[in-house]
Length: 155
Image 1 (cartoon, rainbow, N blue to C red):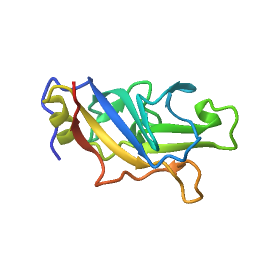
Image 2 (image 1 turned 180 degrees about the horizontal axis):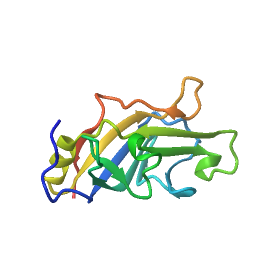
Image 3 (image 1 turned 90 degrees about the vertical axis):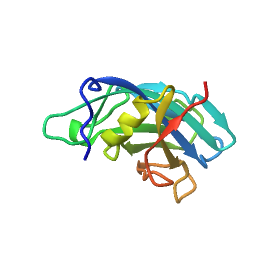
Image 4 (image 1 turned 30 degrees about the vertical axis):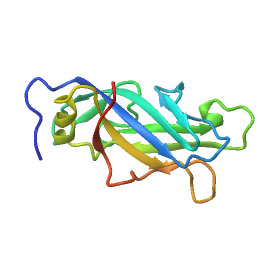
């Protein structure tokens, strides 16, 4: 695997999470730290977009970047983002209380380097927002469309 060039350690990067087919009437929010919540940056019908700022750094003994910052959850060896829904997203009048994990282990130095080399780029992951039971997604959610990729965002 490619190791990031010198000077890229502990750099800021945006992660864009697109939640497709979110169940109608259920609120979603990205968890920051233990209990703070980030609302979607945009909502269109059943598609939600979250823009999550993170930092990337190397970690001793690992060939993949470590994702850092208040949105990064879990141990250094198994980082993820929490996507909360229903009451966990601050929705009072709902029967749903769920939280999904979006794993970051598949983010490579090659993806990080590509994103940092471009102006206004982010790492993109798209997930399915609806679980098999028709409620909001929960548990560890696999990425759609081949996983993580670089997105050059409009200015």
